[in-house]
Length: 116
Length: 114
Figure (tube, rainbow over the protein chains, first blue to last red):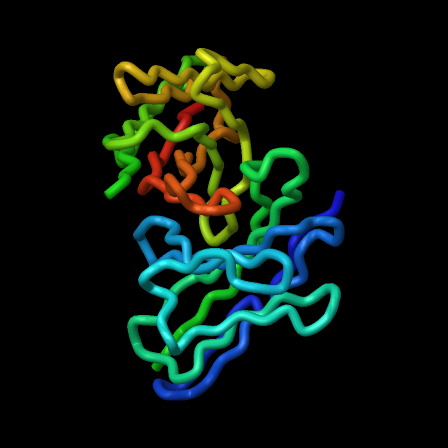
């Protein structure tokens, strides 16, 4: 069964460093998302991406964040200068779209980011 | 602002009983609600989607209802098993948002005791 994959599973970085989190969405999906979950808190939407551009972003997704789909398969989230409060689990998700945009979303296993 | 609230942080039940989880939303009625399961350290897994014009949806031992008058969805697991123990998340699309960006509740942690 097709699945969303994410690498690395765990990333430890120093405050102020840049990190890139990688995702491979399900191959025939059209919509891509990043969410984050701080330990013990709810899953929060960061950004959605469709047709090679951002379609929506939340207040969390400030200038320190960027997303890219550099080729036909990868979808990346970059944090330019990490802060302590960026420590969280980051989930990539994709959905098929099709006739109804509001389809189920398939989530990856997550990348746990720890900022020291 | 639109909110999703799952008022019970935890629910403990005995194996074989029916678990009922509650999700309440505020402001605009969402076009649909989704329910996900999340195990510790893992990503959410989609379970069911119910549209606002559907009163009830079923899938195997799962049942979801949508009451736009009460602004509430109920999620039932019948004949519960210890393997059903997990956190269950309710989610709505952000009203006016594109492509179904989801707003999640905090989740209800279900524990099914043998």
